[in-house]
Image 1 (cartoon, rainbow, N blue to C red):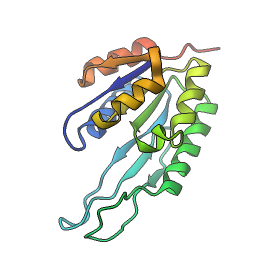
Image 2 (cartoon, helix red, strand yellow; image 1 turned 90 degrees about the vertical axis):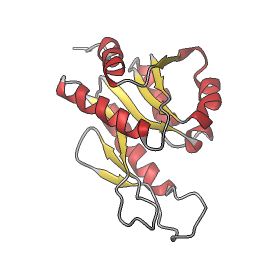
Image 3 (tube, rainbow, N blue to C red; image 1 turned 30 degrees about the vertical axis):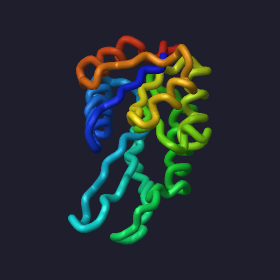
Image 4 (tube, rainbow, N blue to C red; image 1 turned 135 degrees about the vertical axis):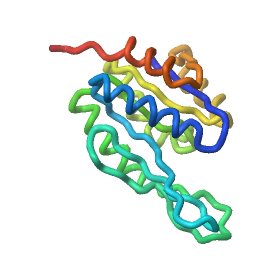
Length: 170
């Protein structure tokens, strides 16, 4: 049970996944995972990238400020790995669903949330992940026949998640 969504537009997937996560929490689902929020600080600089950990109140900055004229990748791999550790701990504590804000370059390379996705699936915990259009081929190669495309619509995604929530072992 690996549902994925591709949303067009800068930041559209972040907003969509966050909306779905809020709806699922309102339904009482125990979520492991993270949603991305990009706070704007200055119109002349790129926004920060923060991951809000869904199992608590932690917020982890995953971007580096490389300066206004930088063109390189702003991802802070240490920040991402800290977020991954928090999410892995939440998964160990029990979750109905794993929510991954993005399957991106780090996951394509076997890092980031990729090990946590594999662990969740091996436990029978369903996974919801957003995928950038440029990463879709690599994601589908990773996911093989487990990947189920979902429409970029909050109600449909929420319904899929509620339908596939992990069975309560108690």
